[in-house]
Amino acid sequence: VQLVESGGGLVQAGGSLRLSCAASGRIFSINTMGWYRQAPGKQRELVASITIGGTANIADSVKGRFTISRDNAKTTVYLQMNSLEPEDTAVYYCNFRQIGQLARTYDYWGQGTQVTVSS
Image 1 (cartoon, one colour):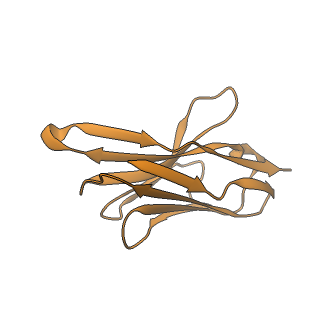
Image 2 (cartoon, helix red, strand yellow; image 1 turned 90 degrees about the horizontal axis):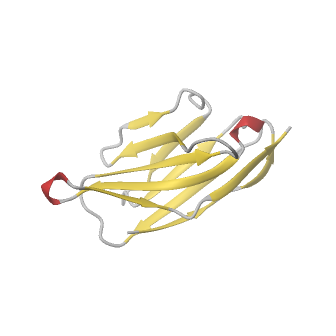
């Protein structure tokens, strides 16, 4: 599975950005797409994820400000980020997780896109 991310950049506090991640390749029917982020000196953390069925999981730190969605083909995930704060500055990574035969889990990562929020 290949992942292509887009949409990062520099924005002032209070602004908005939308990240996109398109998946292609050998995609199974059971999968979850999501976004993680990693700030300098910190561990990578889950921001939001969404299952093939549309169930979303949003981190408490961004709940009410960020929303996650998938397109009708279920191969592109979007992260709409509103009311951005300097603390949201990080490299954002797209994640694609799917379940194959024998319940084996496959994880794929995008190359990462920088989001910088200035105060």
